[in-house]
Length: 145
Image (cartoon, rainbow, N blue to C red; front, top):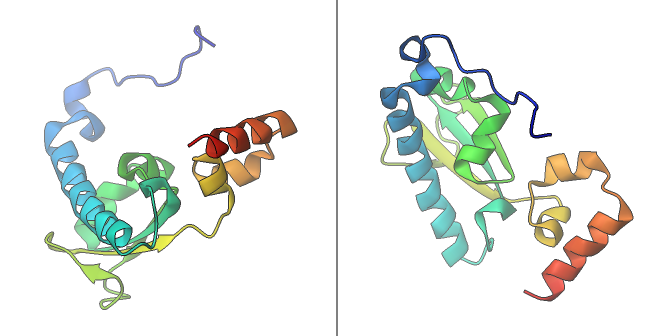
């Protein structure tokens, strides 16, 4: 495992958008707006931790291109169990308006029961079909919280 190659860095990092500071400033601005909506949902009692949330982002073309580069990794950036990106033009009134132009956010509690039990992103966890020993450890962990 220690000798595996997990990510190959580009030959010229200056040419890769994913390594540019400007790119990450925009992504973090989206994350900040999502975090605000997650906090509102926590205060309302709709969810406990951000990993218990599924987030739908309704974005304009510019943000869609930006976030598409992250693919499935977007949920890790937002620290949610699921993150989906939708076209804002197709759903102009969906979600809640944020302080960032071209971004509306909808936060929902995860529909997957394993999120609360395991403390992990449910869709991946559910697909893994974890061995009984792993599931038991997760239930023990939850019991001692």
